[in-house]
Image (cartoon, rainbow, N blue to C red):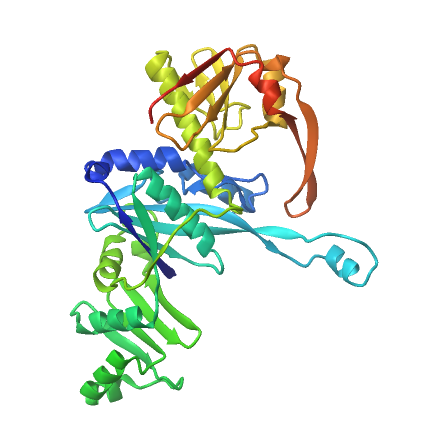
Length: 419
């Protein structure tokens, strides 16, 4: 797994209670939800038991009987969790081949790839570390880091550049540590150097190590391996944790490797993080939706005294059941024009249920989002729409949409709640 590191500046009050912080991360990220094919995700989010069961059932895979908790885990000063997101990538199906030779016309075709990110947060050290596999997903990692910084109320978040100088200093740290053994050396010219030769000429090779006169080094302990690479076009740190320590469950132990990375990597150049404009994996959108749902739950419980339950991941056609009221939540960060879209399931539920309300949450990323309550959504005119979606085949997905001016006419009350 590759390593990406962020530095954060967090107010002291934000990190005083780690249990409270893990609940916030759980509430605001929410569980990941698979699509109906089991190929990708409908929503990015935390790895969870329901997802594992559903994926194994769809793929007819044997599921290991490990106890997996849905919530982030605390280990010392660290908070750990696994996050999933999907990203589309171009593919080359038969229809594209026909288009290439002019036999038909067809646009770009993409299919979903899904990625698992293992995240460690240490508020005391002001650091977020992510372990991941995959290419060209750094933008998505930055989006996730940006969301986490917002949850933590961090004033600044920056990405650490893993360059040659940082890796050489980390190599020096590992070589001097009694916890690690040097197990592999590839020279600057690409030749594998026998470790016996390194041991016999230790001072010479220590000088080479500190000067960066090597292409890759491998360090190992009983727990994991770390590979360092400083090729001309590739400077990276790869981590390999033994399965019994990495697999989610009661025996999982991520603290030693994250502590080593935090101890040994000294940031030299850091880069400001800004959220992506395209949000290709829906990480920012999913966070907006979760903040909207949390805001409505708080409103229903704290202001109206109702027993409200989050059902947003059960596909019942609404997000929250609050007493007799069924609530569909639509949340916006700061979009200038706010049309409402309902899935076919949500629209059919709206038509058949008597107490179906729509709550439109505006300024969802603020500390005091505005909540607009629509108690008669049946009176809103929705137009039927459709769009092509790519699964393992091309399919058409229907949804129903109304413009902002339409739903605003039906608001009976506007309220706010503190998050």
